[in-house]
Image (cartoon, rainbow, N blue to C red; front, side, top):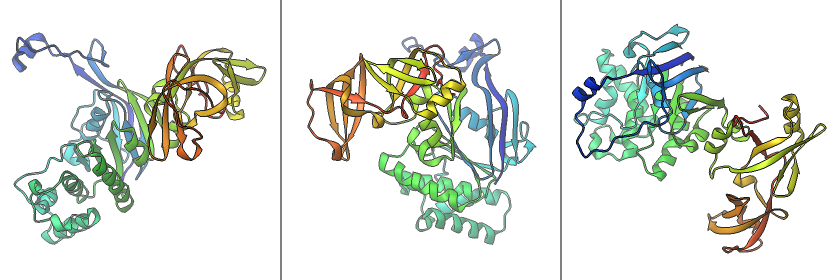
Amino acid sequence: MATVQLKNIKKVYPYVSGEEKKKNRKKKDDEPEKAKVNLQITDEGVVAVQEFNLDIADKEFIVLVGPSGCGKSTTLRMVAGLEEITAGELYIDGKLMNDVAPKDRDIAMVFQSYALYPHMTVYDNMAFSLKLRHTPKDEIDRKVREAAEILDITQYLNRKPKALSGGQRQRVAIGRAIVRAPKVMLMDEPLSNLDAKLRNEMRAEIIKLRERIDTTFIYVTHDQTEAMTLGDRIVIMRDGYIQQIGTPQEVFNHPANLFVAGFIGMPVMNFFDAQLKRVGDKFFVELGGYEVELSPEKEERLLKNDVQSQTVTLGVRPEHTLLADEGVPAKVDVSEMMGSSVHLHVSAEGRDVIIIVPTTDMKNSYRMGDAVKFSFNGNVAHVFSKETDKNLEW
């Protein structure tokens, strides 16, 4: 139950000299070199997080999301005190925490690997941190049983971790964290070790959990489905930088740049090389001889930014791409039946395009090589700068 502020946070890993590398690790002759990617190299060292600014409200659920190596877990570990902050300031409840020991920050962390003590029962695992604080036995018992009730693991309190499934172990790890009633709950990809069915179940459990405990959550994941379903706001990261902060609906409907547009949404957004035409106060996108006027809201934003006619990257989500009698010519490659809808993979304008067609709207069955046309409405067309990759509306 706390506010969290990160101001101009930066993390740099200093260079390790050749001699130190040799001492730390002897490379086998036949072992290939691992190439470093997505890392900014400076005179100071390797920059993992840069210019990170975020204000988290009390009891807010914030999700840090991005591809592997983007700096999200490093950011979380700096909040936890497990990584030193190179530059910038971290505040929890208005108090500067840069030099405060992890145990004194009143935070709890749930790891990807559960990190349970194998020789202890579930009860003892959950009670361990309270025992270290010399909490009275009756209070420990009350808190452990309350947490177990919330997480539906009361029947497992006398078992050891090896007798539990992955989902049950993760519940225990979460229970161990919430018995302390921390101000801030940190969760580092806690569901990534679970299968798809268990992930869905545990997502629902976490949503229920945040309604029952008064805690601020910071959650890290690379799974955009988790981000969209769990977060009050999402922080999308790439190469150590924040790309966009917003509600799930905001980042889905108004992606700030090409990266966000391609990262959020499943299947991924369709992209095309297109022409943006300005005629007075009106804006049109032209693709393959097909022209669509943008919605009044989009036109207003483009006018405010004084956007002129230019070549753009046009983005349209598969669910907003429509089969039509008039539109962009395309040829069917693959038709995938997904139950309530069909994912039609087509070739158009030199690109692979996905069109999602509800089965209730299917007039025909489509085979490889069939000629079709598709269209889209002006309120769902996103135009990105060819030079900067930024959304021209924002």
